[in-house]
Amino acid sequence: KQEVTQIPAALSVPEGENLVLNCSFTDSAIYNLQWFRQDPGKGLTSLLLIQSSQREQTSGRLNASLDKSSGRSTLYIAASQPGDSATYLCAVQSPPRLTFGEGTQLTVNP
Amino acid sequence: GAGVSQSPSNKVTEKGKDVELRCDPISGHTALYWYRQRLGQGLEFLIYFQGNSAPDKSGLPSDRFSAERTGESVSTLTIQRTQQEDSAVYLCASSLGAGHGTEAFFGQGTRLTVV
Image (cartoon, rainbow over all chains, first blue to last red; front, side):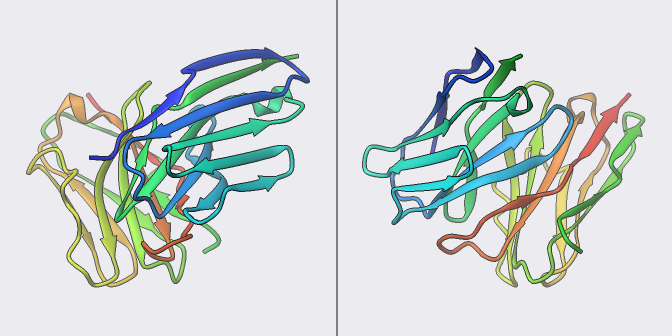
Protein backbone atom coordinates (compact mmCIF):
# COMPACT_ATOMS: atom_id res chain seq x y z
CA LYS A 1 0.00 0.00 0.00
CA GLN A 2 1.39 3.38 -1.00
CA GLU A 3 2.09 5.78 1.86
CA VAL A 4 3.02 9.44 1.46
CA THR A 5 4.70 11.49 4.17
CA GLN A 6 5.29 15.22 4.22
CA ILE A 7 7.80 17.03 6.39
CA PRO A 8 7.52 19.43 8.10
CA ALA A 9 3.87 19.43 9.13
CA ALA A 10 4.01 23.18 9.64
CA LEU A 11 6.46 25.92 8.75
CA SER A 12 6.54 29.63 9.57
CA VAL A 13 9.03 31.90 7.80
CA PRO A 14 9.59 35.62 7.28
CA GLU A 15 8.78 37.09 3.90
CA GLY A 16 11.57 36.77 1.33
CA GLU A 17 13.02 33.49 2.55
CA ASN A 18 13.65 30.54 0.24
CA LEU A 19 12.18 27.32 1.58
CA VAL A 20 11.95 23.60 0.88
CA LEU A 21 9.03 21.28 1.51
CA ASN A 22 9.63 17.55 1.54
CA CYS A 23 7.56 14.61 0.37
CA SER A 24 8.43 10.92 0.55
CA PHE A 25 6.58 7.85 -0.71
CA THR A 26 7.02 4.16 -0.05
CA ASP A 27 6.32 2.58 -3.44
CA SER A 28 8.45 3.89 -6.32
CA ALA A 29 6.12 2.40 -8.98
CA ILE A 30 4.35 5.68 -9.67
CA TYR A 31 3.00 7.30 -12.81
CA ASN A 32 3.56 10.84 -11.64
CA LEU A 33 3.74 13.15 -8.64
CA GLN A 34 1.70 16.29 -8.26
CA TRP A 35 2.02 19.23 -5.88
CA PHE A 36 -1.12 21.08 -4.83
CA ARG A 37 -1.95 24.14 -2.81
CA GLN A 38 -5.02 24.31 -0.56
CA ASP A 39 -6.28 27.56 0.93
CA PRO A 40 -8.55 27.41 4.01
CA GLY A 41 -12.07 26.30 3.10
CA LYS A 42 -11.17 25.85 -0.54
CA GLY A 43 -10.45 23.05 -2.97
CA LEU A 44 -7.03 22.06 -4.27
CA THR A 45 -5.11 24.05 -6.87
CA SER A 46 -2.59 22.14 -8.97
CA LEU A 47 0.88 23.68 -8.85
CA LEU A 48 3.20 21.27 -10.62
CA LEU A 49 3.04 17.82 -12.18
CA ILE A 50 6.20 15.73 -12.53
CA GLN A 51 5.97 12.64 -14.67
CA SER A 52 7.81 9.54 -13.49
CA SER A 53 10.44 9.96 -16.23
CA GLN A 54 11.20 13.56 -15.24
CA ARG A 55 13.56 14.91 -12.61
CA GLU A 56 12.10 18.36 -12.08
CA GLN A 57 9.52 20.93 -13.10
CA THR A 58 9.53 24.70 -12.71
CA SER A 59 6.75 27.25 -12.62
CA GLY A 60 7.64 30.82 -11.69
CA ARG A 61 9.09 30.82 -8.16
CA LEU A 62 8.30 27.13 -7.69
CA ASN A 63 10.61 24.25 -8.49
CA ALA A 64 9.75 20.63 -7.81
CA SER A 65 12.19 17.74 -8.03
CA LEU A 66 11.58 14.01 -8.12
CA ASP A 67 13.91 11.16 -7.20
CA LYS A 68 11.73 8.17 -7.93
CA SER A 69 14.26 5.53 -6.92
CA SER A 70 14.61 6.95 -3.42
CA GLY A 71 10.93 7.85 -3.15
CA ARG A 72 11.43 11.55 -2.59
CA SER A 73 10.25 14.88 -3.94
CA THR A 74 10.95 18.43 -2.85
CA LEU A 75 9.09 21.65 -3.55
CA TYR A 76 11.33 24.70 -3.52
CA ILE A 77 9.71 28.11 -3.11
CA ALA A 78 11.93 31.09 -3.86
CA ALA A 79 11.51 34.52 -2.32
CA SER A 80 8.43 33.59 -0.32
CA GLN A 81 5.52 36.04 -0.05
CA PRO A 82 2.60 36.30 2.41
CA GLY A 83 0.31 35.19 -0.42
CA ASP A 84 2.13 31.85 -0.45
CA SER A 85 0.58 31.04 2.93
CA ALA A 86 -1.46 27.87 2.47
CA THR A 87 -1.29 24.12 2.95
CA TYR A 88 0.86 22.34 0.37
CA LEU A 89 0.00 18.76 -0.51
CA CYS A 90 1.89 16.24 -2.57
CA ALA A 91 0.16 13.31 -4.22
CA VAL A 92 1.52 10.32 -6.10
CA GLN A 93 -0.39 8.48 -8.76
CA SER A 94 0.03 4.74 -8.29
CA PRO A 95 -2.59 3.50 -10.68
CA PRO A 96 -5.30 4.08 -10.43
CA ARG A 97 -5.56 6.26 -7.37
CA LEU A 98 -3.90 9.46 -6.16
CA THR A 99 -2.46 9.03 -2.69
CA PHE A 100 -1.96 12.20 -0.67
CA GLY A 101 0.34 13.24 2.12
CA GLU A 102 -1.01 15.06 5.16
CA GLY A 103 0.34 18.38 3.90
CA THR A 104 2.67 21.12 5.09
CA GLN A 105 0.96 24.21 6.50
CA LEU A 106 3.04 27.21 5.43
CA THR A 107 2.81 30.67 6.97
CA VAL A 108 4.81 33.50 5.46
CA ASN A 109 4.97 36.48 7.78
CA PRO A 110 5.18 40.03 6.39
CA GLY B 1 -17.15 24.03 -18.32
CA ALA B 2 -13.76 25.48 -17.55
CA GLY B 3 -13.15 23.47 -14.40
CA VAL B 4 -14.55 20.77 -12.16
CA SER B 5 -17.87 21.87 -10.72
CA GLN B 6 -19.39 20.50 -7.53
CA SER B 7 -22.82 21.11 -6.07
CA PRO B 8 -24.07 22.00 -3.62
CA SER B 9 -21.16 23.95 -2.13
CA ASN B 10 -22.62 23.53 1.34
CA LYS B 11 -25.12 21.05 2.70
CA VAL B 12 -26.55 20.77 6.20
CA THR B 13 -28.61 17.68 6.84
CA GLU B 14 -30.17 15.93 9.78
CA LYS B 15 -28.75 12.69 11.05
CA GLY B 16 -30.40 9.75 9.33
CA LYS B 17 -31.28 11.57 6.12
CA ASP B 18 -29.86 10.69 2.71
CA VAL B 19 -27.77 13.18 0.74
CA GLU B 20 -26.63 13.33 -2.86
CA LEU B 21 -23.54 15.22 -3.97
CA ARG B 22 -22.85 16.08 -7.58
CA CYS B 23 -19.64 16.44 -9.59
CA ASP B 24 -19.35 17.76 -13.16
CA PRO B 25 -15.88 16.90 -14.48
CA ILE B 26 -13.94 18.80 -17.09
CA SER B 27 -15.24 17.91 -20.54
CA GLY B 28 -13.27 15.06 -22.09
CA HIS B 29 -11.82 13.83 -18.81
CA THR B 30 -12.30 10.09 -18.54
CA ALA B 31 -11.03 9.68 -14.99
CA LEU B 32 -12.97 10.91 -11.97
CA TYR B 33 -12.09 10.67 -8.27
CA TRP B 34 -13.96 11.29 -5.03
CA TYR B 35 -12.14 12.13 -1.80
CA ARG B 36 -13.23 13.00 1.71
CA GLN B 37 -11.43 15.51 3.91
CA ARG B 38 -12.40 15.71 7.56
CA LEU B 39 -11.59 18.88 9.46
CA GLY B 40 -7.86 19.24 9.96
CA GLN B 41 -7.09 15.96 8.25
CA GLY B 42 -5.71 14.76 4.93
CA LEU B 43 -7.54 13.55 1.84
CA GLU B 44 -9.10 10.12 2.09
CA PHE B 45 -9.69 8.25 -1.18
CA LEU B 46 -13.27 7.07 -1.70
CA ILE B 47 -13.82 5.92 -5.28
CA TYR B 48 -12.33 6.15 -8.77
CA PHE B 49 -14.01 5.93 -12.20
CA GLN B 50 -12.11 5.41 -15.46
CA GLY B 51 -14.21 5.50 -18.62
CA ASN B 52 -16.50 2.49 -18.85
CA SER B 53 -14.32 0.28 -16.66
CA ALA B 54 -15.58 -1.06 -13.35
CA PRO B 55 -14.97 1.59 -10.67
CA ASP B 56 -12.47 1.16 -7.86
CA LYS B 57 -14.75 1.31 -4.82
CA SER B 58 -12.15 0.14 -2.34
CA GLY B 59 -12.10 3.43 -0.42
CA LEU B 60 -15.80 3.62 0.38
CA PRO B 61 -16.01 3.49 4.20
CA SER B 62 -19.32 1.63 4.49
CA ASP B 63 -22.26 0.35 2.47
CA ARG B 64 -24.06 3.61 3.22
CA PHE B 65 -21.82 5.21 0.60
CA SER B 66 -22.32 4.71 -3.12
CA ALA B 67 -21.41 6.55 -6.30
CA GLU B 68 -22.56 6.50 -9.88
CA ARG B 69 -21.18 7.81 -13.11
CA THR B 70 -22.67 7.42 -16.55
CA GLY B 71 -19.99 7.24 -19.20
CA GLU B 72 -17.64 10.21 -18.95
CA SER B 73 -20.16 12.66 -17.56
CA VAL B 74 -21.59 13.69 -14.23
CA SER B 75 -20.99 11.66 -11.09
CA THR B 76 -23.12 11.55 -7.96
CA LEU B 77 -22.00 10.43 -4.51
CA THR B 78 -24.84 9.28 -2.29
CA ILE B 79 -24.65 8.87 1.47
CA GLN B 80 -27.58 7.07 3.04
CA ARG B 81 -28.68 7.39 6.67
CA THR B 82 -26.07 10.06 7.35
CA GLN B 83 -24.13 10.02 10.62
CA GLN B 84 -22.31 12.85 12.36
CA GLU B 85 -18.95 11.31 11.45
CA ASP B 86 -19.86 11.82 7.78
CA SER B 87 -19.40 15.57 8.30
CA ALA B 88 -16.51 16.57 6.02
CA VAL B 89 -15.63 18.26 2.76
CA TYR B 90 -16.18 15.96 -0.19
CA LEU B 91 -13.84 16.71 -3.07
CA CYS B 92 -14.08 15.57 -6.65
CA ALA B 93 -11.27 15.56 -9.22
CA SER B 94 -10.99 14.67 -12.88
CA SER B 95 -8.15 13.96 -15.27
CA LEU B 96 -7.66 12.94 -18.87
CA GLY B 97 -6.99 9.38 -17.78
CA ALA B 98 -4.99 7.22 -15.45
CA GLY B 99 -1.98 7.08 -17.72
CA HIS B 100 1.32 8.83 -17.43
CA GLY B 101 1.42 12.57 -17.07
CA THR B 102 -2.26 13.11 -16.45
CA GLU B 103 -2.80 16.10 -14.22
CA ALA B 104 -5.72 15.97 -11.82
CA PHE B 105 -7.94 19.01 -11.30
CA PHE B 106 -10.14 19.44 -8.26
CA GLY B 107 -13.47 21.10 -7.67
CA GLN B 108 -14.12 23.43 -4.75
CA GLY B 109 -15.76 20.68 -2.76
CA THR B 110 -19.06 20.17 -0.95
CA ARG B 111 -19.00 20.89 2.77
CA LEU B 112 -21.38 18.44 4.43
CA THR B 113 -22.54 19.03 7.98
CA VAL B 114 -24.65 16.40 9.69
CA VAL B 115 -26.53 17.72 12.73
